[in-house]
Image (cartoon, rainbow, N blue to C red; front, side, top):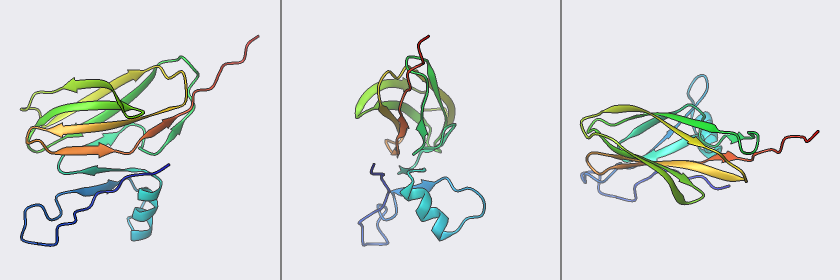
Length: 148
């Protein structure tokens, strides 16, 4: 498993591109550099040029739902400039896309999936200004139910 982190390779601090991409990490308890780095390494983070997302299930988590049973993936998304869309990605392909009104600065989004095999899901969020946020995946390994 490899996780993404945001960063800018712009070396001109006066440029508007410097620092445009940022990593946001979900940290339990008090904040420290060590906890931030550990959260990035565990995939409990997302990269953004603007939009922010608060997942119900922390990115980087592994779920083991019963095979063929619906799984709800819920997110609270926000953008100062308004929201354009939220796309759910499954194993690198578009699973679902939800378009939003550019006048909406926040939205509660839910996707329902029915995983039958090992897979992963991540998000791409676009704001009204054309800036993106990319989440790390949530790993899903469905388990078969025992037959009688």
